[in-house]
Length: 407
Image (cartoon, rainbow, N blue to C red; front, side, top):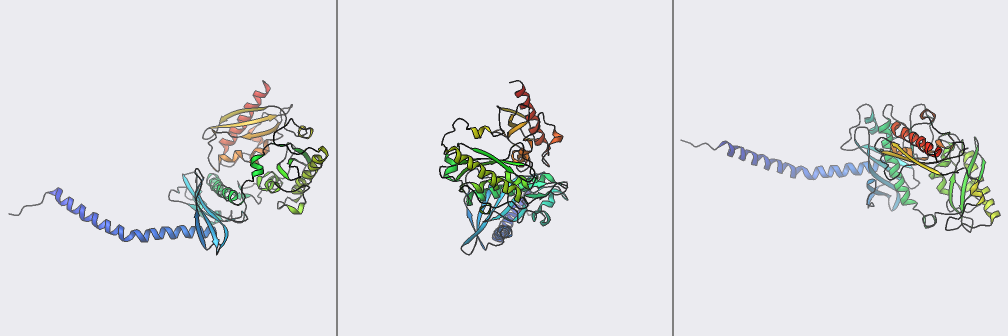
């Protein structure tokens, strides 16, 4: 009589055989799968920076917002950079790949990732060329606008009913562009080592009103720092308001005064506003020459010119609950309660990257300058997809105003 093998031994044999088969299959398919992944990554980089024919991976500093970074070359010439970053969309993590050329122009954007879970028919459209192509040819920093808003060179149309996803992708593209800019145009030693100088203020007529500047010069007349705008600033939103952006102001740093208009890149569609900045800088330079007071390395008592700036009074700080945590503001008010300066955020700021973080950007902050406190939410342009964060700023400003009344 034949003896039967125990059932557990039969199962063990079957399991071993199946394991050997699967292991063999894995070994056979492992290399092709890896090659496919490598090729897919190469194709994504090529699509983001089409002018490059080879890519070299670069190291990233600890704590970088980027996941990886490649230098793209055509032959031996560097033509740009491609990087990937991860942002938080409406449904979860979104991977954003963007290419940026040597002139900081965006050359291509790819959206997706293995964890991509944006809503089908809405946020999922962020992966489609109809959306990603909206970034190509533009220069960061960009901002998302909704239907009916005035478009500009620095705006991207949001996907209908998917503003959170749109803003998240935009934030990723801005992060990549900002890092590439730091590679191509690192901060100079002069700016890093000399943050305090005597400033000279002046204004010139813009498109809709006076454009104020505060400028500091070194002993040779080169520009060390520049700020633009005060509570009377009224230039066209999305067009003339671009003179407030760092991408415009930074080009003046290191330039010899007086500045000629042809020596700077004027903003497309905002020649009058750009010209007003140049003229105001040169007026401030005339004040500097008349004062015969070279820039100093330590902050002295305010000069008469500094007293002409509209920012007066004590700074009052307060916070209000945002989407992910407290949103802190520091505000100054004039004697009538109008806002003369505003900064948003501190080390506890945790709003969503690319969405709520936009409350810290100049296009949002600057609209409060000159407004009468307390501020009503309906009197400001809230950020699309970040109503909670926008409301937190307004509430915090009003708390700060209450503090100012009780000082």
